[in-house]
Image 1: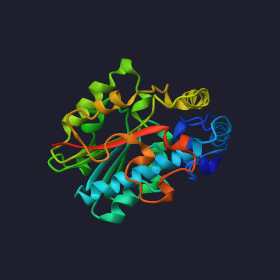
Image 2 (image 1 turned 45 degrees about the vertical axis):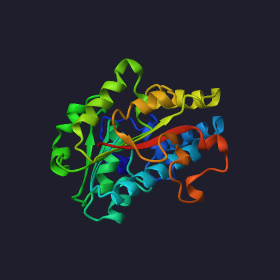
Image 3 (image 1 turned 135 degrees about the vertical axis):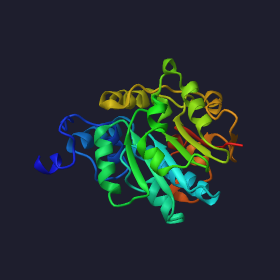
Length: 271
């Protein structure tokens, strides 16, 4: 326990599973505890494609970040980043362009504590504890002001994030605020659980994840998700199932067609 206390805030109960650490476990990361692995294993039992879904979402992240860097983007804001491990944004971006800057944002104090350790010594990367439903606290934060220049294009990522925001929290208004803050030439990437591909197993897993601090999942259809991009121009092939967005190889697609359809994903560009 003493090793754990070296990096985990004392206010965090490590006997309680964390949604961020469960996701890390499903990705094959090392930043999780036995209680998180137990929940991850239960998720796999109830919905055997949970691990593959996490992997495909991370594969979409890699493709989206590489696309943005190819378009000249050199700064990224990853909201709802979880624990930045296993092919994270700054590794992918800085591998393409070493001068890239990244700010990770998550409300989970343990995810933030892990993130601070992972990026320690990299002065082009920052970690911020904040809730996406309070955009002003993010956009006006010291870390964002230190690392991001809002006169230059920014890559904003909200992956497996907006489906945790219920309709009563006005996700349309939240996304509009973030879009308005971005300069011309910026990009917005979203992945979101698909409303047309929901079964009892998926609902049971997300119910368990909500008890681990994620919140309740709101499933939405394609038309509603497309509206989150506002007047941003969707990059080809548009808003599609996440395995269909510019796959580059077998690792981007599952052998199980059901997994490939479990979430929508898209990238939009601000005119």
